[in-house]
Image (cartoon, rainbow, N blue to C red; front, top):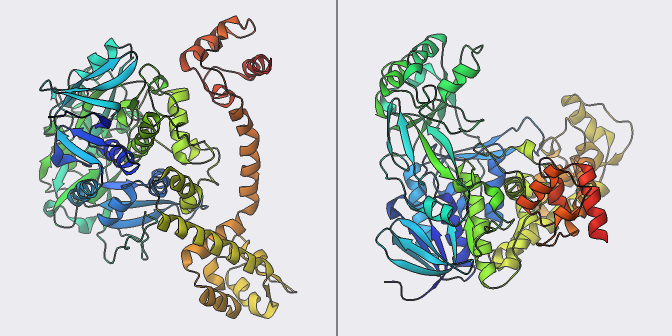
Length: 622
């Protein structure tokens, strides 16, 4: 069936696998996507949403690099919100509520329209290796598929075990079987594995809920989009709702703690710290009398509702009785109960910065197999692994994003340098340079790189160049255009800002914290400039951000330049740390294990202190 050798074989059709397959194929590699069920490509296993705090920035970065997640999200969205608008632009994070079924359908359609991409439905339970290099995979039917490189994106399916109360059974997610054999195959090759846990809440019948008792959460009045392509903003949206647990709900949940796999020892693995189950929340935060429950519709044409904030593995009868005590859920009908799932992962310190494994050349890991949680984190890893799988078989240097270039760079560097013992989730606080890594400028940061890689087309590159040019001319207009006190003082008084006595440049007014571009919209000179030059609000917002936060941006650029100087001091692969007597035993052990590629990465390894870096600096200088 597979007589010819594929350039890239991608195992798994989730968010990581879909992006990996699209990237490799779009760069010109003959690619095969192998998944256990072709009907669930791009499936949203948990919540029906994309983006959010820091995650929205990642989706924008994926889109700027030529990935599909942003486009798919826009074309399947039922609501759009820009979170954190009350804070600075470094914190603004786009999020869409998605139509779950439409999301997967759009993914399947886009992949089928991608040249160089084939599909096959089967389980992969072994890999083929010769001389330390990947040569292919083997399906559960014993069919060998030859490949120059392989990307593993197995999600929660590796020896997956689902828990509902005292019951447990094998599965990768509800209604789908687990994948067996691959973990053993990798362990025999010398890889270390571990176990992690994640969970999901009940899905319920929206017709049985009383939304009138809940707080409505509508989308933005002027919804935006994720993609920098010409996707169309939503004309109508579906609202979400918020309700709350109560002491009564907590008491009902506690009645099932003795049957909870979290508390009776059935689950030994670590779950996500920042997305705990409801039983974990009321146990850890016993002083809290209530917790938020987000009621999220699953699509345009379905009554199914996702109960965000009520992730649980308690027995189904406990889930049901407790949820019926939540305001608005008094007559709730279940579609299916919540559950927890344990699965195998492989500590990501076993990877290079390209996401290629250190043990086997041409073998890449992406997504939850690396210990991450979240669609966005998985998709970004898949994109990077797909790009690098193509580059490695063409004997080109790997593509690596630095921490000051993208949240994706922060994510991967954290994983391969620090590792993770709990499901890793991205936050804005993890990025040292988040003023540089805003969601609004991902195209300016990354599309030129994508264009050089061959992912972004000429049309996209021209659009970015036009945006950059228009932004510069708009900033120049504000810096050179003067205002009259009589024009500007009424605006300043209305906004509660100090009035002026003499003329000055408009940029100084726009730089004030209380002033926004909308406040200056009626100034004749500005209206004329925008009209004559065809400047839209996206460009105007970009100019406003760069003017208002110029000092912070410049400071971060300077700091990034200082700290990234160590990036240029490379450490040879065969460097012998053991001969350096001044290095501590801990430093030698961790440096030998991680094998950092440069001094900058070495400095971020847990347990490596500044004196160790000084020793390495002197040694490498010699």
